Length: 105
Image (cartoon, rainbow, N blue to C red; front, side, top):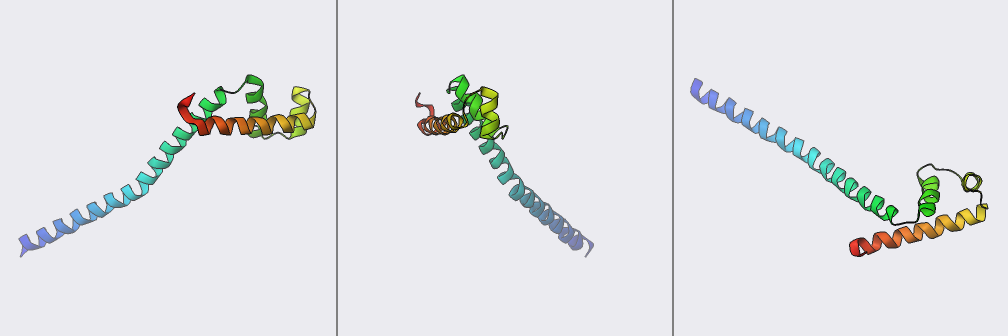
């Protein structure tokens, strides 16, 4: 009887261990995938940004990363607000084209 009880307890413990591992994997794999995707995407964007001219990178970085208003950017780079809007728009389009082309160039 004790042997049978020990076997049942061992089986329950092994099942608990298996389910615990499954729970860990279910939680961990999507996180690992998300981090890998983010890292891949980040490398692609940084690589594409490096293909832009320095002044394009600077203005886009001020607009996106620093979150400055067009008026603030215009004051920093000493151009009109309208010119900043045009440059940001054109640079975003250029960055989009570079990212869509991928590793061709």
